[in-house]
Amino acid sequence: MPDIQIVILAAGASTRMRGADKLVEPLCGQPLLRHVAQLALGTGLPVVVTLSADYPARAAVLEGLDLNPIQVENAGDGMGASLRAGLSGVPAGDAIMVLLADMPEIDAADLAAMLAAFRASPLAIHRACNALGVPGHPVIFPPWARAALMAVAGDRGAKSVLQAHSQAIRPVTLPGDHATTDLDTPEDWARWREGLRTP
Image (tube, rainbow, N blue to C red; front, side, top):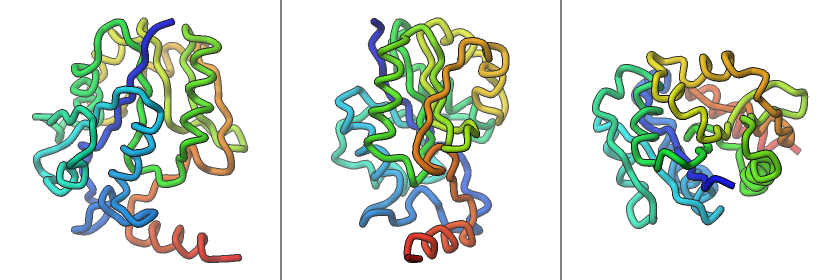
């Protein structure tokens, strides 16, 4: 059974927030990025977080947490650069859970479900999907996928790897829209928060 580490991708631009940063939006009484990082640390696994120098507040909200922050020098090149930087902090023989930092509905039970699926079938790619079967995040990649992930370029993340190895993917169903809710604009955040307050 390979070891596994969690890589949180948090180096992307927040351009659609029109001057705000979605990763420091408050959630459960703390910035979103810190909330996600604490969930990851709660698994007991090593955690890597990729960061951009363009967003110093993100590094600040992680202060005091026992994780490995990695600055992405070419973060503007897209998610591929962030993914490669994150992998550089993980031993070659380890599996990785790629966890996006901007998904506020992911919770501890979701991460536990993903890890249970991986441990039951450690050679497969495990991808979270919502209750309707729509694929989302997080995704666990076994060690054999590392070379393909390191070759990813641009802002499509690991989509090319997932397409090339679709037969190896095992879906992991998470409740509701946990696996697919991400909030990119102030309006998205406002609607989502209003939904939380609706009986």
